[in-house]
Image (cartoon, rainbow over all chains, first blue to last red; front, top):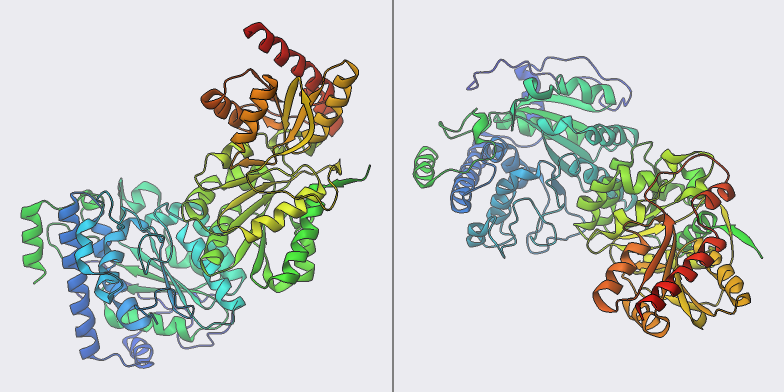
Length: 315
Length: 315
């Protein structure tokens, strides 16, 4: 394990009946064997993981370059979720880049909208728009606003940035998918600090109430927010237990471990009758030594020298 | 004269829309019996979602449903729909330009006995300030049905202000109402009363009382606060030189505020604003409260006389 943080991987009802909507099991330890089972539902092999890691490296490079050119923006929280987003866009989700509004597509809602550089990087890498456009981040006249604007950028599903709201959009999209009898799935990526917004829990309540098993909430649990450690500012812990108490299936994983990310996504896809929360422990600024785990890098962009150093580290 | 509450007309209109259009979805926040969305819920249970006492999530969910192609009507009391969830309406609905119709009942002091906490006298101002938001205040049941139908067909966000109490029906069923166009219900050259909602009927009463005093006044139903019919306002300003606005809302930021902005910028004449004078409501019967806050035909008569004397003083 490459993380300096102790983990207790928990998985609710991993080996038991996953269709029971009323029971949240308290912290099943996930053995390596269990992750192997989950990973084995679809083909997760070393080659797939290596490819996804390559994609995440490109995303991180683009994030750093973009933020360097913009001179402002959210570095730490864009980098922390890069592995999760790479898994979603290059392995999990059904999308059609030539038809961004394809009615049957899976939806990704960046509820932590300040990680817009990550979203733009992955959309460009998927081919929703030319990667040259990334240079326009945060600049006047560019579609790439400081926070995502669905009216301006193909592939952006929700105009987010005001924290707490994206998860509610995801509830609405999941309800619409059910009404339309479509089998698309909805993924919302939240910050851990974002969980302090009261409306998140209104939405979480609704997700369980309407048994939205086509919905997955992923919490980028990097432990830091603007003013300090989330536990010091206003602790949202324990996160998985809260989701569980609301009636969600809650899974804790290492958000940089591809087998665990993919295993959890597999589990969510196989689960009926309730939504799944994936609480992904991550390192803010992941991948760049002088940015990792530092509060100051929440809303700061690298200068040209720092960009060069970061890109060298990401080679 | 038949008296019907606009909220009752709203409930019936929703059912008709639901019968005609599959993409109509209705949300409520545990007030469906009061807002009358319960009619729709009974007719189309699969397309109605009670979001519980959680207005913020209701607005975010509405955005997600609209982003997936639904035309969403979201209802609560005006004070909660526009106040509690204002920032969700701003960022998730208006900023994204989505097809969500916020239709709120129990606006104004005629809520009555529930008291000041529940009497919204700020909602028009709160919604009018949002770019791209259409703001409608129907005067009676006929207007309500026409405007609710109109906002269904009009792309983008809208706010429809509805009342709790039964109000006299002014319009014949064949009356046509057009977005952005006020209706001149009565013509007279001495002054013009520009009214909305329940004050339209009071304005017609005032006009009859003034006629007995030898004054002929025009009465305009300005049901569309935004976009505002500035052309009609300036024509009446030129024709009569004295304007009175009448609304069951604060004189700050509502119809009176909007008319003053237009008149001051384009066709300066005195404007006397009848409305709630920068204060909160309180418990009482609707009649007691209308009298206490100066929202009667008698108050409008005095306001017209004041506007005329201001005009003549200028001349």
